Length: 416
Image 1 (spheres, rainbow, N blue to C red):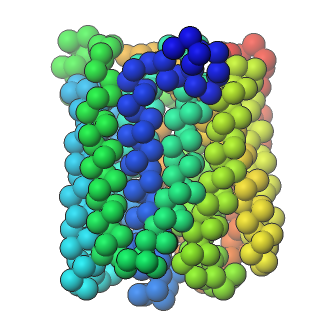
Image 2: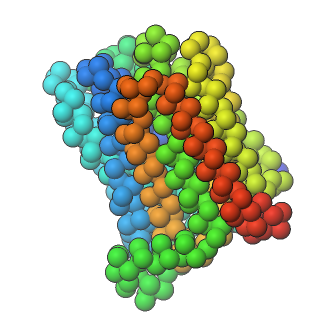
């Protein structure tokens, strides 16, 4: 443990819960990415429509509408227990999809239907992970822990995307999904050992509050806390205008712009993830010397600027290099944002605040649904340009409107 404390990147592993949570989250993220490559490619090839791909991708975030209730449920039954139930759902959905692919009965309709089921649960997975970290981690290790925690998703986009494409090519979609089920099962077994010594932060009177009342309290708290409000609004903007072009739409970029196959899509996803992983590691090792709110704003501006350039790239190698840079600044934006929300929120409201924050993810399906018809009408380059310019304008407005809470060096959001 003494050796772990001397290395910033490894310091969070001094906490027993984190030693189980990190590999559990890593396994889940690997399975998510493997599924994403398999299903996004299946939908695009079987329908031949980028609009259908956009609609399917939007279904994966359907649960953002009910995500605040996941935060409140975690307050009542325990975040670890809720996360285990969620991961049981992943296993069930993956098992059904594996059976459909094995007997060659998978259709766009069945994939869309199961996508709705998974989409009701999956968006809250990141919220529950962050809540567990905030609940079990000392404040002085929070930035490092959030950076290390973020590497689970970032590294999974490298390994999961490539392995998903490789497994389909080698074994076919059915057996690839059998592997996905196995990874989910490993994740569940590890999650059972997470957060054993849970902190009770709610009083009995708070627990007795109805879900609707608790949701209202969460919205009121977010709205009345300037730095939390600004970070939540910025989260919505990033999901609406930035993430679509480095997420599900990469299948369209790979197939229709770069002329690549499924393995090429895996490489594009991996390039973005490599940059994000480098950003997360940088924050884990140097996080004690950064200003979280300032870093978040600078990362947002750089992200939109790089997205603007990426929209006009037509050469795969140049696109891959740019995706690495985009992934890096993405981490500089999103990791400090999560730290601000976990650190500044009252522990009694933390679940509700993170639940409201998850509603911001609904910007992603909205952005996807709007981008689909726009791409078919004016093309990917002009759609990316419109989104990037809108993002730059609104991110700049956010920085100016809440400059005292987000840019001032002595502001609470800039203290660790």
